[in-house]
Image (cartoon, rainbow, N blue to C red; front, side, top):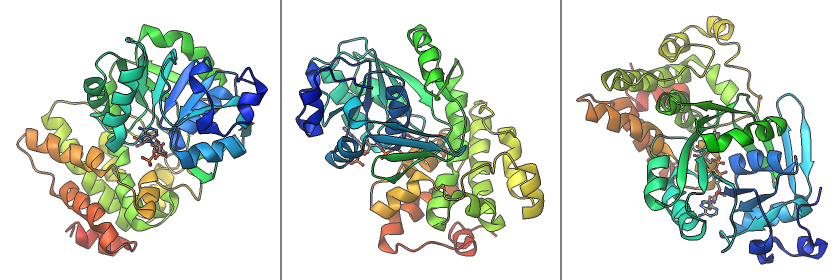
Length: 356
Ligand SMILES: NC(=O)c1ccc[n+]([C@@H]2O[C@H](COP(=O)([O-])OP(=O)(O)OC[C@H]3O[C@@H](n4cnc5c(N)ncnc54)[C@H](OP(=O)(O)O)[C@@H]3O)[C@@H](O)[C@H]2O)c1
């Protein structure tokens, strides 16, 4: 597949290409795990996708293209020639759709850059975790139409340009007429979209599950191994209890995104492991090596999204005259981790979170 009309253009190092001259359909703002998986899936179907990212990533994509794999054993490859790459949003581009796929701490800068270049009214779908990214992006880029999205599956970059989906699920996006023409395209690309109106509940439902990210990151274990340990599950259950109490107080109903209703999950997490394995069998359909991306962030010394997860719980609790001390302690633990970067056993983590 060749998306760049001039073959000579494809041979140039990615950031030097005259990206503005390339007609594109979709712009991925933040070429990383999610952006490359979803954008690469679309590019594999002939959609003209531009990836805006950091030099390290652009060099890897220019060299290797994008390779995609998933837990069902599917593998796909998109050649470098089929990818439009840029280190900034080039003036003059007019994508029909933008996927915002930076981490929460980078939202404001990324959205401001999009807003300063793209035609007013361009639709931007935030595929980020957390609750506030869409509001932050809309404020930083008031001329754009920012929509909420939620990616239920885990993606990891296993090698430069190799992105692996370690769990399954359908992407959920805020209902919008502008997205209807895209439904077939995303479905054919293997990343189907569900349009929903109750995105606040969907995002809180995802946040509840994402409370496992710091537990997983601090455990130093793959997700599956961590969830098979009753002690780590107990820590996650305590984080979720506080979030559920705050949601109740705020009259927010979190959507059911796992086989179990959100409210039952803490009780299931507290079951003895053999019983947990039976009840949560579908929840445990995870690649043996999959980890949360927060583990990668800690390992690489990058800023984490802890404030967009546990921080949201603490703020929602406080806004409703409650406290969320376990989530507050988890924020401290993650922020202090670089001072002593060693995994915590389940017993150590329970003690640090002051769980009996
Ligand atoms: N990975 C997953 O499994 C997963 C699943 C569901 C949802 N999510 C959510 O999806 C979002 C993205 O996560 P991710 O794991 O894909 O993150 P990621 O791998 O870190 O990818 C984001 C990339 O965007 C780059 N970036 C940041 N600001 C930029 C800018 N202004 N211009 C160009 N590039 C920029 C980042 O570079 P720097 O690192 O230098 O900033 C990074 O390379 C997060 O909110 C995450 O919680 C992730």
